[in-house]
Image (cartoon, rainbow, N blue to C red; front, side, top):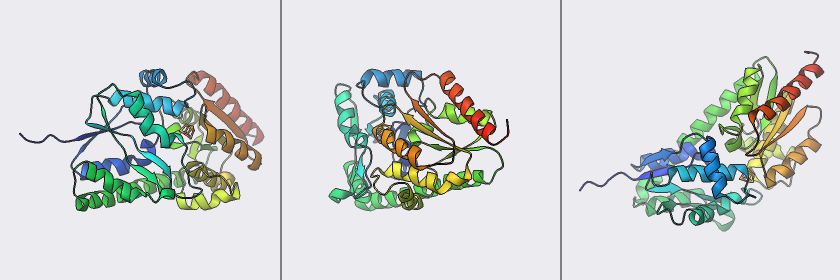
Length: 309
Ligand code: SF4
């Protein structure tokens, strides 16, 4: 009997927004199919909230809802463990615990999970992790190396194109607001999308602190903090350092309760002066009406200060 194609499930949350070009290309180049969960909606949020402990951040609750939406629809669901990219380059601890957490939460589902581990402090880099991942799926080292190489190229090209698109936005005339948020917060249809949609509706150009050259951002992050150890927070800090002079306001957008953002946003508020700033923390109860009211006042304040109101 002909062997069926392996289908890998990708939950559309957390690191999906950073790695989807890499993951998709890697698995497809190895002859597999990928199944991505649909955009976050109320049902996904409620399923995730029911599965998570109360203390989990909104991003993790949403992630569990996406995993639930994929259970039974694919051969494996990818749940990576990404700890760090070396010293002072750590990821939030949630990214260390998700594989164990997901396996425990879905232990009676019959679903198989697939993982890889990046922990450069322990000499486990991404290339080695993907080689192991491909081998576990029965592919030859040669095929896996080739697929990984193509996947890295696709990821770099995809990210570069997105950064260029945002760079062009800085040259447009009009009121610009820089949003400091994790990609999985700002791009999620339930969390950040209503914020960017609102800003566009009222004629404001939303920009993203995380959409900058990552190596450059890591260097520039030192202008605001030389000790911040979280990789994504450092990229965001670097983006703010690079573009704070190009925008009319900054929005700090977080998912409740986020440990790294609680510290880093406080640091930003203390060290970035001379630009209006709004701190928006989203939880599962935040309705769009409350968020829009705060955004409306913020934009009014900026326009008033600039003499445009
Ligand atoms: S950085 Fe914050 S929002 Fe992201 S997973 Fe960690 S606690 Fe959740």
